[in-house]
Amino acid sequence: INRRGLKKTAFVEPEKKPAEWGSKYGSITFNQVGINLPMGGMNEKGLVIAQMALFGSKYPEKDNRPVVGGLEWIQYQLDNSKSLPDVIENNNKIRIIPDVITLHFLICDSKGKVGTIEFLNGEVVIHKGKDITVPVCSNDTYEKSMNDLKDYTGFGGEKEIPASINSISDIIARAGAMVNNYSADQVIDIVDYGFNILESVGSPARTQWSVIFDIKSERIIFKSLQNRNKRELNFEDFDFSCKSECKILDIQNSTNRDTNSQFINFSAENYRDYKINLYKAYKEN
Image: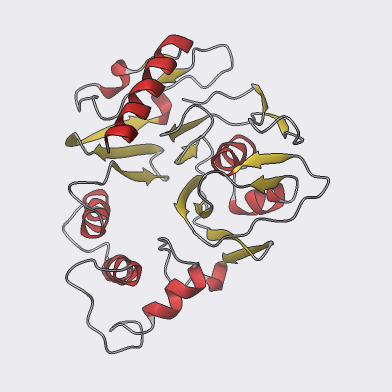
């Protein structure tokens, strides 16, 4: 649970010029690496940012702008932006630098504006508005994904939508088709339908978490590898003021009963224990 009103400094190598900012908006994020290094999340203004690995990305060359890491870019934007146009504008104020893996980003705001931001050949590549054919991303560039999609039925091609996942284009085809086939007249709840999409392109043995960001209702619903039950987080139940305690939740061990009460106060000790267990898991796998 990320609070508003905090002063932050980017966690980068000493020789680099770190970005500094004050968080304008509170947010709820899913963090595998650590605090302020989210894999994705939503802020209290309804802005959602998710990331996917994009190998072959090339970030902008060094200039005078202060820098943030790839995952930190997400927190910077959730702290400072309330819309897709804000994200695009704020991106010009900082320079993103590589983490272990290079990334691209899928963004949606409370007005329903969807966009992607990628860094290719040292340039920022943005898709938005009419450039968004289908709001689906995986581990190829958005342009390549949409070009591959044209080969499938329903998108101008003749290839059948694949019944199983063997490639990134299979993921895009299956997810894209399910997004396009959704109708508000369907009996199934839209959140359940969203999880059906995620399950159709995920792995029951490897997918660590699946998340639905319900912007309209200001809530987040998620499942995890060790608990397939849906758990729900409502923004109205959290205190995002700077005077409140920083709260964290272990999503793998949390239950679907009163999830909010399972949050604990962040501390150096529980953070250390978490990181030790994380590195042990990596070593074992």
